[in-house]
Length: 113
Image 1 (spheres, rainbow, N blue to C red):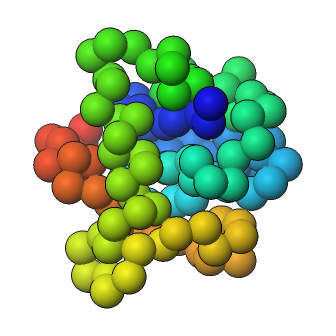
Image 2: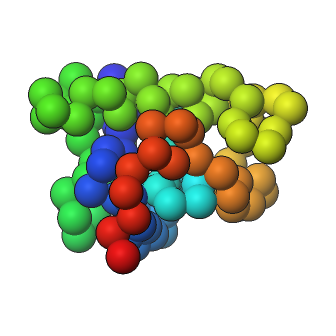
């Protein structure tokens, strides 16, 4: 039951959750953060520190944000725009560094200004 970051994170990316993650499984896209479901240990440390309440367990995501559960998996399982290979589970966001791309769902969201 991994955690998921949903729509409230788009164009906010506070990164407090990244500091609290003991396994470094929160990756930085261009406009949003993503939790790697293969690396997440379900500790929940990330959820209470998110200032925009964008993080929830995948089974507890609000109904209107359910598309982000699948989209979060897609970020790691499918090649992103400008990339030939999927990210997969590289063993930590710090080692990997910012991805610089988002899924189509996130990229299609109107800018928050």
